[in-house]
Structures are given as C-alpha cells and as structure tokens.
Length: 230
Image (cartoon, rainbow, N blue to C red; front, top):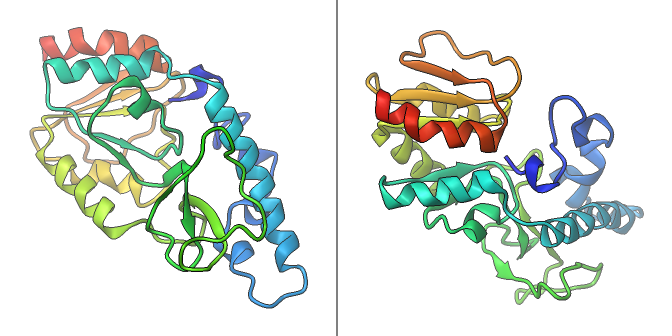
C-alpha cells in the first residue's frame, strides 16, 4: 500500500526481507538477548534499522490510495486493518485504523511493549540507554518477529471483518499470519475484493471474489464504481 509513497515493500519481489536478515533487525530474540555480551550490539543493529525506517516514513507522504480510502468514509462505514507500520492512513484522514503490527512512529518500553509512548518527530531516533517511564530500554512500538500481536487489536479486527459487507485487500501477499486468516472469517454474503498488480492466490472456499489486477491507487480509484455495480 505504501510503495507508491516511496517506502520499500518487505515481502515479494524486491522486498526488504530478501536483502536483510529479519532475525538480526526485527526479531524479539535479538532484542531480548539477556546478559549476552553482544546484547547492546544486537539492539543497536535493530535501532539502526528502525531509526532509518522512521526517518523515511517522516520524509514521505500518504499517496492517492490512502486518500481514496479516507474519502470512502463520506459514504461508507470504513475500518482500515493494516500490517504497515507507517501512519499514512491516519495522516490521509482515515478515522478508524487498526495497526495490527504496531506503529513505527511511536515508542514503547521493553518491559511493557503494548503501551505506546509518543515520539518527537523532530528527533525520532532511539538510542541505547534511552529509558521508558518504567525504567526499561525504549524500543519501537512495533510487533517483532516471534512476538504476538495485541490480542485486543486482533479481536477488534475479527469483529470488523465478520461484520463487513465488503472486505477489500490491497497489496498484501496474504502470507503473514494471523492477518492472512482474516479472509477466512468474512461472512458468506461478504464481497471479497483484492487489489494487486501481481498474480493473486486465494484460499479455497472464498465466495464472491473480485480481483482488480492494478496498483493500489489505480485499483482503489476503480473500487467505488465496482461496489456500486455489485
């Protein structure tokens, strides 16, 4: 979704995880490394990665696709469920966004990682030794590999999915769980619409499927007329 804003994708062709070892820069096992002599070194590698990502998010802007989704609220009840850690949906004007994998432009504490702490956008970097109010090392407010997503956010996402008349998937590989399981939770009458420029493979049993083989902004521009015809 945010590729058109200038951010890299993480999976698929050209994805970040094809070039960088996620275990070294985004895993709970690397961050929670106990009393190992190289613990600060491991944490610094992760902070270098996320500090760079934060600066990139702040330097770029929401794209037309984000704005189209926000505009849909004028006519529909819209819940955005995103795996992206940028704030572009909120910045574009969407009022009900579930950030399943956390928010890269917020901090949290290592001891209580599900409680967000605001950042100073003019000084977004985290350093070794920066402390949260509880005294633990500050870390990004994101879900690392090997961590569970916030159960309250997941429950909220499931409720929204089950209530949906239209479930629109934009630019997701649908390979990351548990988010990929949401497709299996839509109701029998729900219309499933997938917007992706590549080949799309859906689970067996998905009914009322509509595929727009387009980029995010172009596909979303066509979405409204498609919904009106369904």
